[in-house]
Length: 120
Length: 108
Image 1 (cartoon, each protein chain N blue to C red):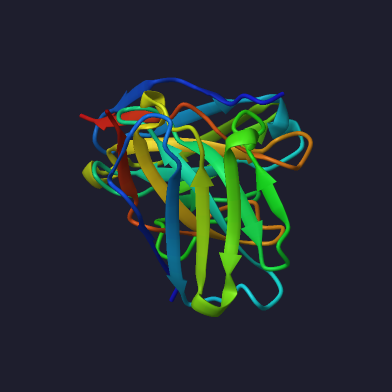
Image 2: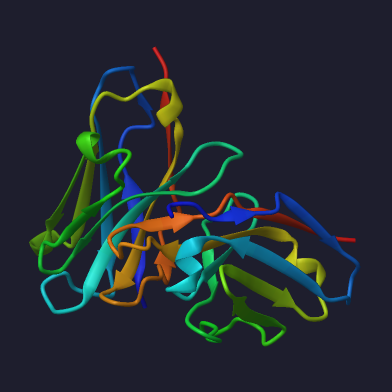
């Protein structure tokens, strides 16, 4: 059974850098095929895909946010970390991490989500 | 194209059939993905590939495509199907993922 859980600050100030951690179990990022993506959802709004990393360190980023995002993996500790710089009020959202398999295109298991509020 | 368009809201009478649509150029190349999201919960995959449902998804859910349109059909909608439905696809360049704006389904 695959499980994922997001952790990080619930409140950040404008211009700060957000760092979120996705801790997962039930699959490995050291063996072929596994991947973890980050998706966010502002309150009452649509889902927005942010970034994804595969087991081989292949990284993909949303073209509109690429300059602000960094996704890394800590395979030893079964974690994927997302950093987003220069946070603004519009970045207030629930941030989800989710599992995928290479070539699958879909996210078949999701974390519960972490609400991050940007406010001074 | 980098957009997927969905109707904001759809309603269906209990037990009737409803079709939720999604439009985007990438759907000519990639099968759509459909996620169900109930209030306060994370999205959950309900349809992928040509006609595939994850384990546990009832067979009243089905998917289809036509040109640049994708459809999620619920045959015999139940009260528990009331939720937001999000379509998703890879971008035409196969490098990015996209989500539609979501459709809120109300079961009357």
